[in-house]
Amino acid sequence: MNRKGAERIVFGTLIGLIIGAIIFATVVIPLFRFIYGWYTSGVEEVTENNFNELDKVINSLLKDENRNEEVMDYYIKDNAYILVGFSSRCKPQENDLNCPVAQCHTTWPWSDDTYHIPAPTSCFAEKSCLCLFKDLNAGDFDGEDNKALKCFSYPKANYLVSSVNDVNVGKAISLGSRGYEDLVIYGECGKILGPTKLQLRKIKLNDKETIIEIAPLEKQ
Image: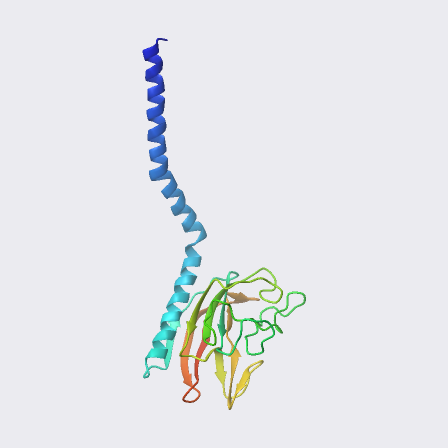
């Protein structure tokens, strides 16, 4: 083979490699990212979108003096996420009785039902806060390093709760003639799947304190 023939082969090989690299960069990589995203983040994105929408509804209720109630569709992926509400009195430290308690895992050694979940550091100090956590395989909070994935703070609300009753229910905390249950909603707790609808209510305790109640209406 003469020199010119060898040069043509080398040149042709280089051109082929360049074209292959261009196809890989412009077609294969974007296709892989699309397929990977479709398989790994599709449902998670729905959960986050619902969480963001819930934040918008809460802010809308707090801003509008004439609106006190709202019902919205809601999805939280089972075995994946937990929705937790913190009052303005809850501190970012353990054993604070003002912080919520998870009631899903009650069997030792994975029990959480006596553990008060500290407010995440991403919450504004002395403001109510709504956070999304991972649902772990065993216990979710007591002895686990479960960091909040995302939080929203509400300076105009003192309490974010699950239900408000004329009398206390379970471990509801007394607020005068009313009581409330901690807001800890799982995508799945035992055989019960997460809610498909949430009812939100704004309740004025007095001229200074406001409760946002978030109560599941339906289960999947």
